[in-house]
Image (tube, rainbow, N blue to C red; front, top):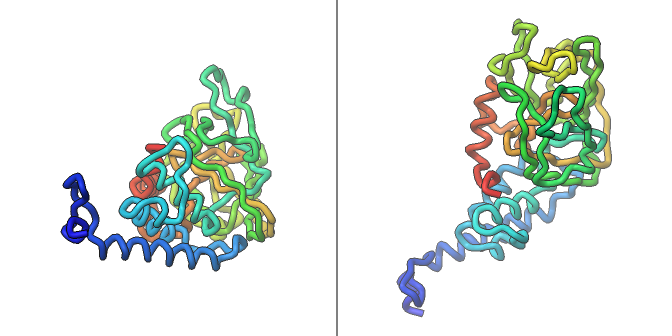
Amino acid sequence: WLSVVQGRNSRGRRRLPVPVMVSSILRGFAALMLLSLVPESVAGPGYPACYATCMGVCVTAGFAAAGICPPAGLSGAAACASGCASLCAPLIISCFSEDTSVLVWNSNMSNMQSMEALPLSSVQVGQKLWSFQGGYLPVKVIENRRLEGNFSFVELDVMSQNRKFSLAVTEEHNMPRIRKGAAKKVEEQHLEVVLAKELRVGDMLAASTASDESGVASGVIFAVRRVDKSVKHVLTTDSGSILANNILSSTICDGREEVYDRSSWLKTLVQWKGMHHEFFSM
């Protein structure tokens, strides 16, 4: 007992002081109690706080204190990151509709027309998909979670190089928008980050077209609709981005998180990776 009070275990190693450990455990239970009161149909800004609290408790006091079970095959911070993401998933506010398709990475791809489109329902964790960052980039799926409830979506119709693309994302989904006055050929320094509910007819997004294999082209939004859906997919990649229905989108789940420099797509991605570095050891 004395060794515990003095902050050492039987092997002489430092351990958490009892008040700190108890405080961490209580914070974990408090977070769990609050989360249990939130129905899955609610999508609010609670995910970052939930995730941060869960990670803090898990790392300092263990899985049980955080109320999670360590996923098979993972340990340490990676297990905490995966478990906390699952625990806080009902609070995630940036998601894709179930009818979204993504492009499967293929090392033998000779041109864009040979890309295989795959529905989100078939995407597996660890699978490589296509995104665009300085060129077409294979990205790894960190999470793909299906949630049921009642969710508010924004449906976007985009025209790019005489091709129509449509994408439905939740209202709080982070989207890269081309700044006003930018050149027709999209460069990433011309992208800013806005919520899907802020997009309007006439705004420009970046789209991947078979006729422009060197990069993404600008596409103009010609229709915006608000709809409710009963299913959403939480998709996260290690880059924070994805080509969804051929439209460049983020997989950032934090909604309008004020720590991001939303005037810059590239800076936002860097900041997101810094806040979620635990994911990249999974």
